[in-house]
Amino acid sequence: MLAAIALAATAMAGPVSASTGVTEGPLPSLVELFLAQWKYASGDNHGNDCSDNWSPAVTNDMAYLIPWFPENKAAYWIYGYDREQAGDDLVLRLKGKFPHARYMSFHLYDGNTGRLVTGRSSFKDLQLAPDQGSSNPFVAGVDREVSDRDYGLIIAPEGAVVEAGTNVLRIPDNVRYPLFIYRVYRADDQYAHDGGVALPQVLAYSAGDGQPVTSCPEPVMPVSEGLDPTKRPDTRLYYSPQIHAYSKHPEYSGLLPNSHNYYGQTGVTRDLGEVALLRFKAATTPDTAGDGGSFSHKEDLRYWSLCISGDVFTNTSSCLWDDVVVKDEDGYVKVAIGPDTDAFRAAASAKGYNPMAWGYHLRHVVYHRHMQNDSGFKNSYKDVPHIDFSKPLNEQWADRYIGDYAFTGFYCSEKEFVSGDCGFESSDQ
Image 1 (cartoon, rainbow, N blue to C red):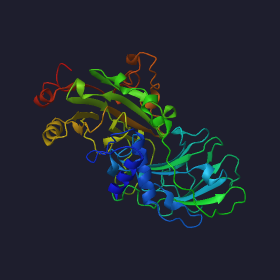
Image 2 (cartoon, rainbow, N blue to C red):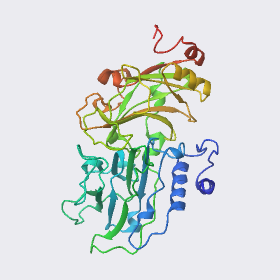
Image 3 (cartoon, one colour):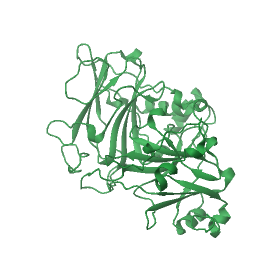
Image 4 (cartoon, one colour):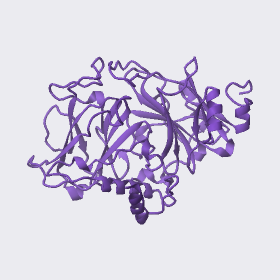
């Protein structure tokens, strides 16, 4: 199937490397590759039931193939259409079940810009009112395994009349290509990436008379302005022998951002060393790997991860996430980014580091994702000002604001690292 999709995408844009999945032509190739797969996978909708227009799941099974800096321990489903084709008065009613997972949300975007819409742009799990007779398992104290876990969500144009007291996202009048994304992070171990529930059903109606529509709009995935690397800061500006994180806030991003995540990011390069070493204090997060229990929302963060991505194509090769990393006795995480070999991984693991491979990227960027919790934690990247390239970078190091919760690091040769002459344990570092 992927071979047919790759051929379709190649015809539209440029060749795709079979070994890495990285486009050898312009960045839109990745978007067109994804759209080709989406349309190939779409089933037959029936009447106003448009549920088959959900995109294929974006997961770590598609590493390198998807832009927008996806997280490898999350799954994303996209729904998009053209309002000129579908009509300005289309109302979508979603019906779903809360997944068994660490987090879920819905976000609404302007597909042209890749930015969150103005006004209310998202619902995260515990903000969704459950259906009558159901419970929301993300609310503090509610059994995470509760059986009745239904909810609804309406996506409607501005001004459309909908039921009072419902969960509603509004499409601004000036948005031609609405995109909404359903996210599930860190599904419980006994479930697949969907968290053990089906995708939400999508039913389409006319806002004017409230009647079901007779056909569903075709899936649309525009190449958003945020994907243009010439319109984003060049992360080579971050390059320095001493590695520091810089804060990135979602409201400034045109890459379909998650409004509940704030990021520490920096550019890293093998030109400064074969191995990049990072270290940071791990924030506390809920333990949701197994079943049962309930959320308290008293932990520092809901979720965190650290990923290696490509600055040009905005794709992701690998991630570490909060409940699988190796930490030292003081709660610190050490990461060694180096060659993709068994020997390097064994050497790094023996020293207490979490090994990561550089991956196939033209330019590498590290993303440290902090998902906000409701605990009032004040050592998140949210508490660091968004990067401003008009100001000196050394005044904007995240560790100046939140200390060791922001990663810092430096470079070594592989020989120095393996021999023990370079590392956080060395007296000269």
